[in-house]
Structures are given as structure tokens and as C-alpha cells.
Image 1 (spheres, one colour):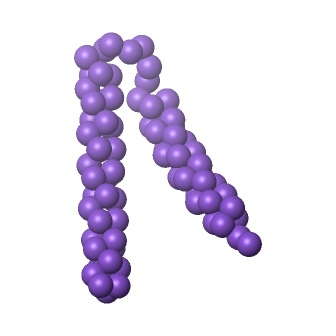
Image 2: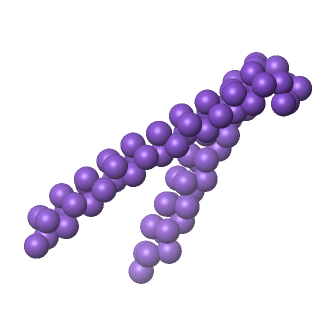
Length: 75
């Protein structure tokens, strides 16, 4: 039973990561389509600067939440 739980959770995490990558790619292409349609008056350099910043900020927030959760479980 324990080995089933471990293997299932690993498989689920891989699928979850793949889903996030696919969603990120779709969002990126949608924003680029808006740029090509001239709906926004921005240059691509600002878009390419802001996207990695937003991704990095999201990763830092996720890491912070994980550490806070582990610290709250300490005795």
C-alpha cells in the first residue's frame, strides 16, 4: 500500500508539471497573438523582460509558502 502511494504521488507530480508547462506555453502564445494584432501598444522587449520576472516571482512565492508550511509543522 505504501509503495502504491509513493509511485502514484510521483506520477501525479510529473503530470502536474507537464500541465503547468503546457498552460504557460499557451498563455505566452496568446499574449504574443495580442501583440501581433496590435491590441497593446507595447514593444516585445518589455514583454520578454516582464515574463521571466513574473515566472521568477511566482517560483519565489511558491518556495516561500513551502518553507512556511514546513516551519509551521515543527514541534
